[in-house]
Length: 249
Image (cartoon, rainbow, N blue to C red):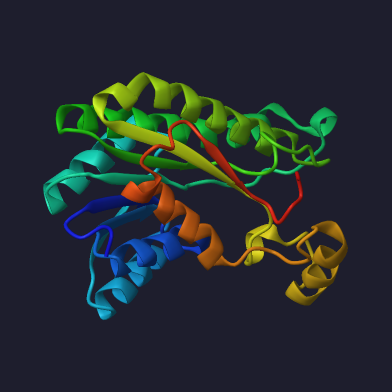
């Protein structure tokens, strides 16, 4: 119960890693606010947390819009009494080779970095005034650590998030705000599937693609998120933790 009496904000909390992290934070005692584009998945996440005896609420928000990012932090504080932990996980995938991208695709992909920046901006503003906190940002193996054809715009956004994380970390650690990122490789779920690929086909592909021979489980990724958010990683500042099954070893 590392997060008893803590309040955690999870963006992109309706599905995948975000949902799994929200459930895990609640299991360890945190009260959680989950946000994203779609109401129904957020409601389901909160329902599951409450069924397990935890406390949670949801709010639809697009953190790429500054007014909504600001309102999200304010709502978290108003509903739950504070903001101790933020997991900035919201994201999307835009594919296409660099020479074939159009401006709309590029702008959409880079808006993910904008959303992370705006989330951090308003989270940090609150944490500076209330004694500190912890922020964990979702980056990726693709971009900061590895180039994969067809992912240039996505990788550029994630590289920007990793750079923002390092800079914000050194700017704010003196104020009691600890900021880090994590960069997963392929993770169980539809986001890591090649178009038209089944999970079984993916499993066969991973046997020859990654040294570990498989994708990461959600629990393996969320375990790292919770570690970065906890006092167990208290000396980790401005890091980008790679979880890739040996891909960059």
